[in-house]
Amino acid sequence: RGDVYLSVGAARALLGALASSNISHVVMTDLVPEVVLYNQIGVILLKLARNLEHLEKLRQATFAQWQQAAQAANLNFRERNLLNSPLIHSLYSSLEAGARERLQLRDYFNGLNFFKDPAAFSRLKAMADAGRIQVLEGNLQDPEFISRLAGQLKALGLTVAVVDFSNA
Image (cartoon, rainbow, N blue to C red; front, side, top):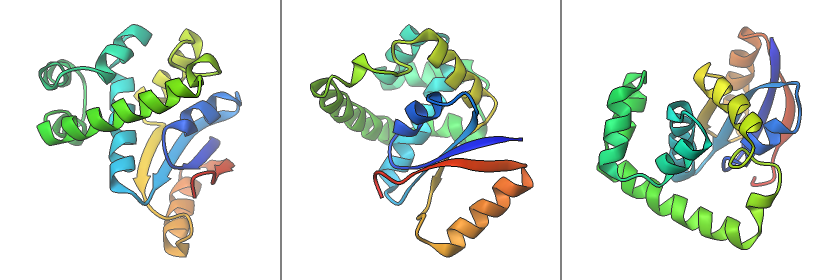
C-alpha cells in the first residue's frame, strides 16, 4: 500500500513527492515523447547513482561513460538499451543542458531538491531502485488512459494522493 504523486510533465514530480512523507510512489505522465524519454533516463540515472556527486556526473556524462555505467549496473533490458543508444544520449544531453540553463536562471537549485540534499536523494534513489517511480506516455484527459492507470494502481493497492496538473 502507499500514496502516489501523479504528475504531468518534467521531473518536478520528484520534488513534489519529497514534500510529503506519505508519498511512496511517483507516476510521471506526458504526451510529449521527448519529455517521457527525458524522465525515463532521469530515473535510470537515479538508479545508477551512488551519491549526489555521481548523479551529477551521470547527468553530464559522455556516451562512453553511459555505456560503461550501463554495463556495470543491474538494469533491465529496456533501461540498458536506452543508455546504449547514441541518439538517446544526444537527445537527453540537449534537453538536460536546456533545462539546467533555465533552472539556474530561476535560482531553482537553492530550494528543496534532491540535487543538494543527501537525505532527499537517498529517499528518491530508494524509490527508483524499488521500481516505485514510473514514467508513462499518456494523456490525463483521456478516459481510457485514466481507467487503465486507475486499474493498475488499484491492483497494487495504491491510492493517488496528489495530482499535479501544472503542465497540463
